[in-house]
Length: 512
Image (cartoon, rainbow, N blue to C red; front, side, top):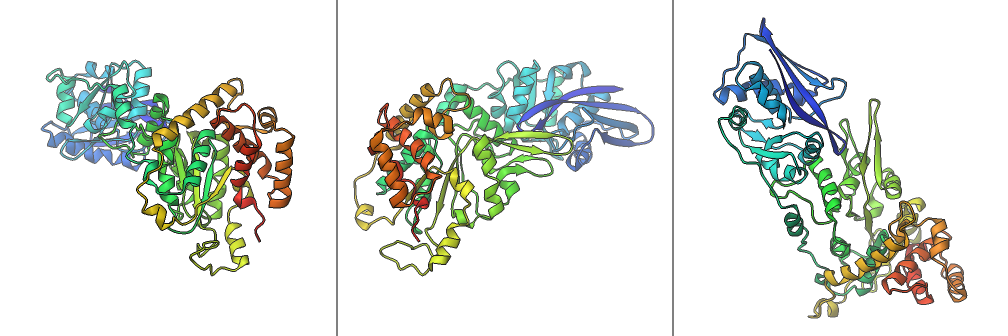
């Protein structure tokens, strides 16, 4: 007898349908799985047999069982096919009503006792089930809330054990589909415990962060150990505009595929903050592997990628950042397929001014020679530095500021100004394809929207000659000045805006 169970697989962050066909006939004992299964899928034979028997059902050994996973030319991976394979076998042997399974998409990993374990990517699978008009989606209980976020028509049925699934399909048990209030969950998940007012002092750095957030500019902080660079960076997402529901769902899909979504959190409502260690490999940062998975840049989608101790990262790791920073996506090509992971993130980096960390610090003597400092800073290539618009120095916090009872502005107040500046930019670039903030402007848009008067030109000329700014800093200064003007709701870029923007190019100055 032949049975057919519908399931799904992941390709990148999207899902596609998989048909699990089971043929059972008389013959010598035989159980084989075909359709390009990986080792985890092949091993499901042992889990399925044990789960069926330990759940109190009969497994007929004197049968020839062949399980085909279509499409057969696409690699199948993971343990999510345990449940559909078990249901297919039980439907072929008459334990499950074959006519009941056509209406459902079924996924889940089986434990040896028949209980269900969570899977990856249930949100993407729910969206696909909804697109294909399935009546229901059967998933483990831990994945139900997440799956319900992507299903408007298809009902999501949470299951805890194989017996629950069998009784439900045979009509012996009624299980209510899970429902979630997406708006309420989004509102609850969008609160962050961090706040910018927790940071004492460093007002000029907070101002630079506000400018960076308002214009979508990448930011690098240079300062000695203990000056608060990491503390400031962790609060950077709290001053970015609140995530929209569409952004939250897209970000949740990435985290779901990567298996990073907690069972009690069906949605990523706060902008992600990813902080990989400097020993990370290029594959872990960008994504890929034998079965491609999203890397840190994709996990930071719609959020912040923080690279602490930037010069300590391997050169090849930093260089692979250039393409996603430019395109907002990561393309991974293999012989049989290619896929794309989204990677629209803001880069926030931190570094010491020199190898010992105390160059320019008035309270600690620097032990580094000029060549050592130059070699240290040269680890960051010009093309990468080109993509970082704002450089800000972070000095050690004075005791007077640390002991002060006065707190700075809360993140909500700063975010409100940032949001207004972003709205100005969205209106300005409404007719410009692919440009949503000042940081994305190309040369044509800079000439069009960043015009300056004679006084401004003289100021820039003086900065280029006397301060020693490099030529590549010119466009960056104009873009940052445009953002500062937007924060002050000014149509024109004034010399005061240019003066502040020039201060944010410290790494371009010829100090040695």
